[in-house]
Length: 111
Length: 113
Image (cartoon, rainbow over all chains, first blue to last red; front, side):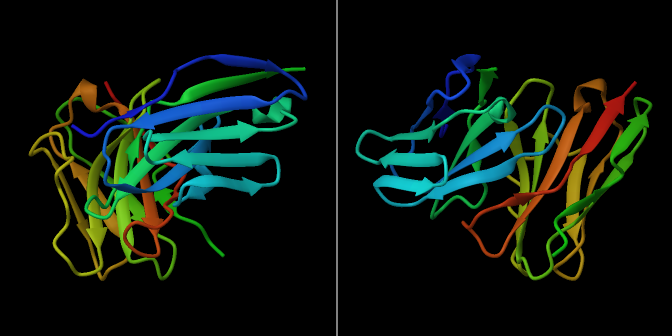
C-alpha cells in the first residue's frame, strides 16, 4: 500500500509568520509531487508542483523535495488569514496514473 | 478557458436508487480521473481514463460503481443501488496527459438517505 502521510493539524501560526507543512511518502519510485489547497466546502486547487530535488519558489510559496528522505514540504512566507485552509500533499509515479493524496494538514493563520 | 465542470452540484437520493454523476473535462485534456472525498477525509482514487486506453478501475470500491467516458471527453460515474456509505463528495479531475498536473472540478455532493 503506497502511502502519503501528513500531520492533520491544525497548524496555527500568526499572521506574517512562516508556515511549514510537511509530507512523507512511502513509494521510492514516486516522480511527481504536488501541493493542493482546499478551502472548506471547495475542491482542491493546485498550489505547487515539484519534480526534482531541491527548492522551487513561487511567490510566497516554496516547495522542497528530498527524494532520498522521501520527504516533501511546503513553506508559506508572510502567512495571511486567507491562507487558512487544508493543504493536501499528492504524489504520483511513472507507473501509477492517479494521485495518492495525504489526508491533509489544516492551517489556521491567526490575524 | 473553461475549467472542469461537474453536474449536478448536489444530489440527494434514497438508499437503493441509482445515480449518475457527470464530468466535463478541460478541452484537450486526455486524462480524466474520479475521486471520492468523505467528510473530513482525504481523496480516494476511484477510476482513471487515458485517451482510448482501457480505464484503470482499481479504485472502485464495489461492482455497484462504474464509469464510462464517451468520445474521449465527457465522463459519467454511475452508482447503482446506492448505500448510505456512498455519501461523499465526488470529484472529477483532468490533466493534459498522464502524470501531469490534475485540475479539479467543483465536485458533486451526494447524500444517500
